[in-house]
Length: 111
Image 1: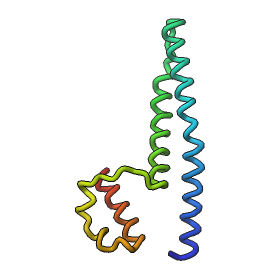
Image 2: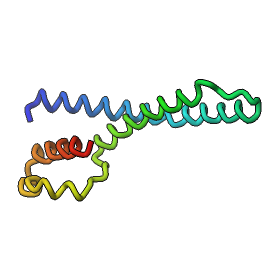
Image 3: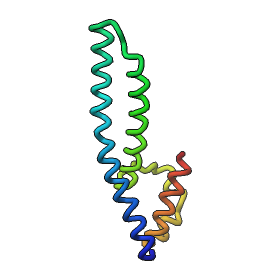
Image 4: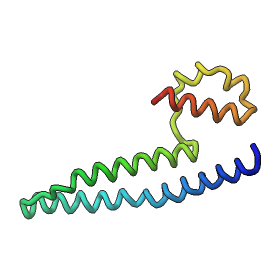
């Protein structure tokens, strides 16, 4: 990999890691909104109209960034049924570029 490519991907890695660490605080915001909604619903008998929708949207953002972060860390669970179908990975396992392209291909096959 050339030096400009490496610096570009290093920059992308930094952005992915920092944005995921910031996004992890969305869980606490979701907890506060849920708590406020429960209190408003059961104590004051006036549920928050926007609470459920906002929670769903924030949770969607959280899941997207959590997926990016786990992909960045390489911690995704691999499906062992699909992996043996790509025997070329095991034959050329010493070439990191081949492993990365296999990871991307199996990711899109899963989707």
